[in-house]
Amino acid sequence: MRRRAALLALLLGLIAVACSKPTLRVADIQLGRSLNADNSVREHATAFTPKDSIYIAVITAGKGTGTLSVRWTLGTRLLEEAKKPVSYTETAATDFGLKSGWGFPKGDYTAEVFLDGQSVGSRKFKVDDKR
Image (cartoon, rainbow, N blue to C red; front, side, top):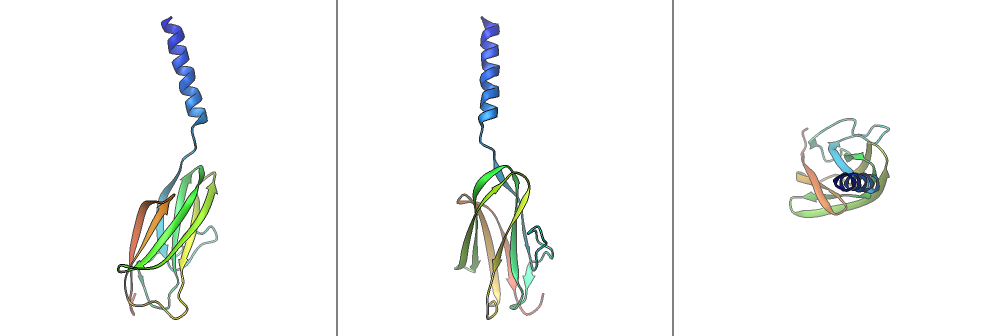
């Protein structure tokens, strides 16, 4: 009887593992001025000039689907929020860019990253005349 119970518990455990939903997770958040072909950041930076391009690359690991988003703020002022649905089977990079046709105002900025609406980290950076 105990042997059957142990076998049943083992079988149920294996079924639970086989049916569990794959987990997509954020492994890294990169900030910089340019991107590589795979959407990872080429030139990492935390200081920018008003005319620089500004990119975030969200590096995900695991298998699954979800929605990545980035909330860009200058001080407490929301500048932009962008969302991208993703579906990956291996490590991948998803890029987001902050754009300004007239140049960025000087100041302290934050880019906060979300996976399915849950904050997973942020990067602070500065825009000034000097890098």
